[in-house]
Image (cartoon, rainbow, N blue to C red; front, top):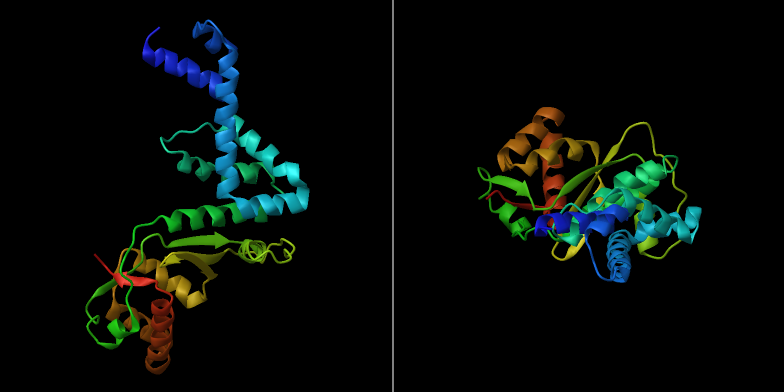
Length: 253
């Protein structure tokens, strides 16, 4: 048996407990296969536990402590790793949770939020703009952008308030759907802390354009066109101050 065929059969045993594949390995003692399989599953289970602590807590509160591990085991059975790094394995779990808990949408959205927070934490560093940068006038023709790793996540449930309560070890609010339309939540990293909050309507309209960069002056003109000269300038100043104090803005590379 060639190396490639051996690897394929070993993978089939690990991921599917394929007895025919195990037979083809032609091992003198097959008892070690179970050890490898148990280690493989334990590592994937640990990855999901570490990536989704608040989701695990919410599922435990609603369905019992064993329910998270049962869901994780079903995910492991149906979704084997497809990337070289174990960190990437967590990415597919929210979709599985939606299938396994179709009547509890806050669970899937809470998992989405935890995944986004984890990915934002390891985003590249960038030098954030300061209020002094804005006040100097040097940015009038400069394109500004959001710091790397900023994500916009549509939420229909109160998953964000659930995360905050569970993270602070406070009583968990009852999961519920907020309305008929999704509300965008922005996730970003300020220094070494991941942050998130729901966006106001004009923020939701303006901020996504900063993903690829937009001139500072153009943002002000857009707000003036929408709100009028006085209100537009006032709102532009308030928003830019808020975004800058939150460490959200950087110069476009």
